[in-house]
Image (tube, rainbow, N blue to C red; front, side):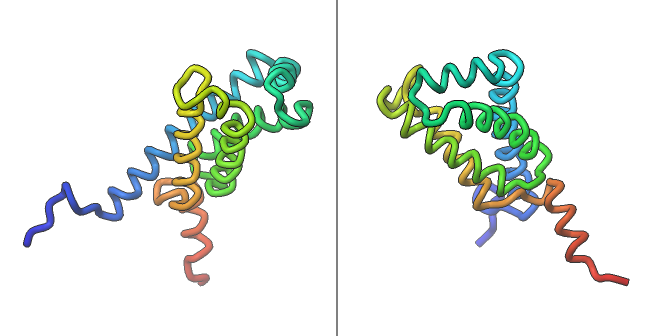
Length: 147
């Protein structure tokens, strides 16, 4: 039996796959955080969160904006990856349950996009940063023998 590249994945391929998922997810979150911080502003985000019925909008609005912007950047470079991804998973679960569920599955009001981001965040949280990340470099140094 031969191993076809179609059915077998090398550790390098897996690292590339995780990096693609991590970086693209990070770009999406960072862009949304950038929009919240620099287009709408904190006051605008708080106002929208209030309209959507998000609890404690004066806390959750800025928290979501900062998490999305800085957490997205963290995912892009692969730093504190699991922590950022877990934060995103919690945020997307809240977005689905509090805001989007009533809109059904499909966009523009539905939860399909938030569900996709929840799945991507959970995948990154479970898989970890992958070999092409700052976390992997730092872990390599921590695991290297001391001379």
